[in-house]
Image 1 (cartoon, each protein chain N blue to C red):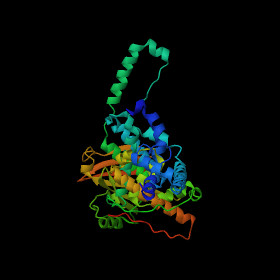
Image 2: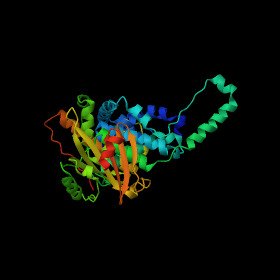
Image 3: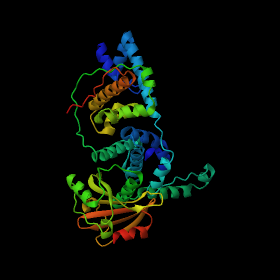
Image 4: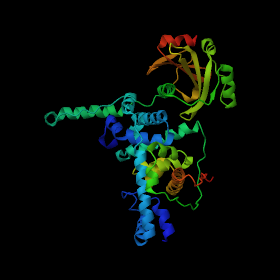
Length: 177
Length: 251
């Protein structure tokens, strides 16, 4: 299991990144804690089924995301969008604009991005996963992951642009069904 | 590859090299080296990526989260590390110990769905939750559940039926719907409501729930819980206090 790590070491290594991913999805400390705890609980009860010790981190992120989707379904049901290919431009923002925001504001904007883009975008920024691994964690095709990150990034940067230059109008892009 | 195509690909590039091995990315990087406008845009985009990443990495992690995770772990396993000399001298014992550890590992308890249900519901009550509706009496709560197309034919004990309500919620546990009734029984010295939570789900979602006629009392953190089966439903009541405090609500 887990590169020879015992449970405590495993928790020490991954609870921070998992919590941050959970918080970026839920924006509430209680829900993020709940998701993180549940993820490790599931690991403690089912982790022994994982044969490839190098996949522990991916397994944990996959499980947390699955639990998040379960939690979300009780509040809002959103379809599994298959996004059509659509050209979009990245709004140009400067490093100074991004720097002007504090961490809480960035998380707030991340949560204003359309639902299907949030998890891929969080993993894109927070973790050093390849696109293939992100696709595996979110259980969507590779192309869909890249498309969602690209669109999510455009929305996020537009929100940042909007916040830092009040004259620009923002229109939130809706995901295509 | 033209500048527009390269820009689209480079938007997905993360500084640090994780994406550099991708053939299309490599081609787009080459394009950026030839095109000063594209290069300037790319440099700015990388800087913005790094800033947003750093901001997200600043999300503070609750200090006691690690402790709570470890406390919640079922069947904790410990790794015992002995000094090298002792290990060398006691090879046989080490092998025996390894066998013991291995046997412990393979005997990690399987998920007990009833325990998990109890733990998750109690955690929800303790940590906070979003209610689908607010309602101050139980007739309204029942009507709200009906409006949500959730079962409203649950049966509560007379002492529970008498309590005023706060509201309710419907959510999923292992993909099975659960109804949560939030009730209260007076207020404490500080004026806070003495809250109770009743969770109701279908019997099929908790296969190892107590059999009809038997009530299980299990403390979870600061809460005492009672779980019982009646009809086609499993009920879980959670209150602050001990079994005695809870017992009266079952009558």
